[in-house]
Length: 348
Image 1 (tube, rainbow, N blue to C red):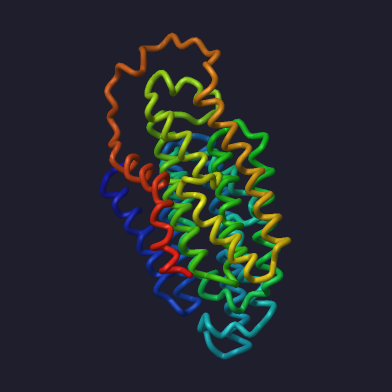
Image 2 (cartoon, rainbow, N blue to C red; image 1 turned 120 degrees about the horizontal axis):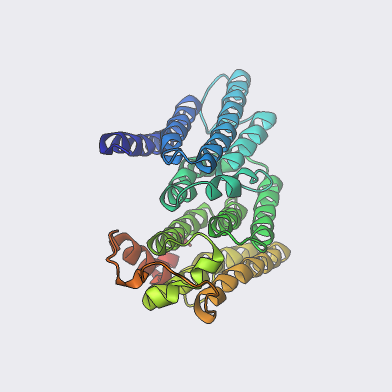
């Protein structure tokens, strides 16, 4: 892609998200979401592969549907209340419609069906943008309007997402689909705690972005898209295999890795709020997710690939891609648990 076009598209992505962050008016927020969608569509379709075009079409249709519902619901709310302000959401029908549309935008269950299919059709870097940056603007809107939503509906969305994210990833062999289900499960953790401690939602989002970035960049660095490809990585770069396995365990939420911190805080807060049953279901759902992360770790570290490679020995070729973003995100995805006391001072 032409570098000038790429720069324009990436700055438009930034502009759309920033516009949504800064707005308290529904029309401006809607405009930011639309700029975001239109900026990523050419990035998704840039390879002209049938799968990429199909994924782009699916993504565009779902995002356009969600944007239309947001526009309709905010217009209905403005008609009832006489203003477009986000803080004044007194129409229950409009509020429920906006939550459903924003849930569709970030891929919360049961509006998650587009997410694995779309992610599977994209290359790993565009998939990384879709899994991290594209979640920020809709989540910001959900956090801003959280007090207007029905608490039972938020809890149901959170629980469903963590369970679906766990169950859905169990029988997958494609790494991008596994990461899509992982994303759905993490979104569930963020939504379940939103009504009790919004600062924990932001903490979980930050940790999710760090860990997912590390996972995607690792796969990009090793050109792996299927589980059986993972079995060949250890001979090329043993160190990368070690860190990749640890990043996956961090995504699963095992101590002493970074991913344990948000889950620990969220379960603690749920117990404080007198919701032990919800906390137990969330912890069990995390165990289901942990199974498929462990499956990937097992493939990477304890199996030898049955494939006989006839190509040039890959470990002798020079790596052309920059490893600095990978190194930084990996370090943060693995080693932030010791600063938990400092984060507790900030968020609790």
